[in-house]
Length: 139
Image (cartoon, rainbow, N blue to C red; front, side, top):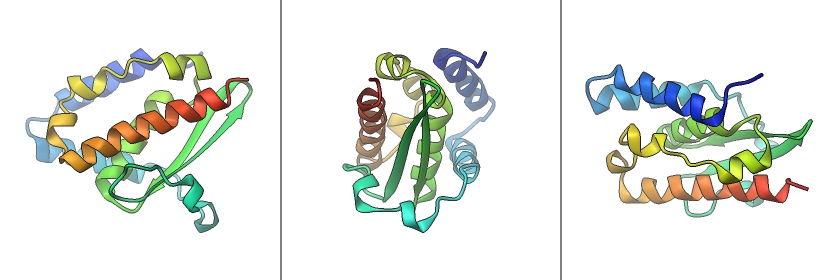
């Protein structure tokens, strides 16, 4: 059985506690973004863009064996890291688990206050879109 959403959040919190300053934390975030599989250009369509993000973030959501799978890319390294981290937390869970998830790790690692207001809005937009997609696939 895979780890629960909260177990994965706790892992991320522990990882971020290893770094002393935000430059190191940003580097870690950028490295997470590099772990995303390469998205084919044919998937980077306007209907897959997350609205409310300053940079371009494409999200593809599917359901396999009752679990939601996310696939994403971004044209900006920080946004790519943020969506990679959200995918790590929410991927391969049921729609109900995703919709009801309390993503407390964002506040615990101090992400929101270290993002520009536009990126912070983008983060909220990413979470909202991921939850909406999961809800749409819940039937």
